[in-house]
Length: 147
Image 1 (cartoon, one colour):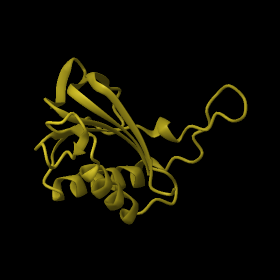
Image 2: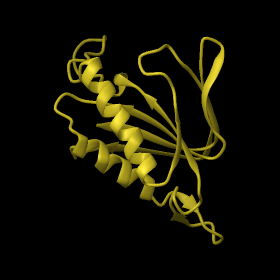
Image 3: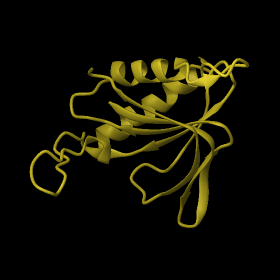
């Protein structure tokens, strides 16, 4: 599982001109499921992300987690995180999991985040989406469950 985690002031996702998910303050999380990923990978990702100390405390130090600030998360499935551009100019998505299995593991990741007492909203798996956000900081973190 790969994830790009962005600390946001606000974020929303739109499908067919309708907002289907939003986050007033917290994290925008793009998630890509790789071939060979398991529920253990998604549970690891959820626990790690919910505990990342990337929010500022009163001393302006990044000492607080999403859980600490009672923030929320907008979680977007994004298979393109698995794109391999080492050869040629067109990314290869051979490392991406098949959509049916990816949906199961993506859903497990969202469930695992909610088990960490994080309010989560999502986009629609496989749909063309427009994501709007204000990156706070900016703070952007990359997570790979295999490394």
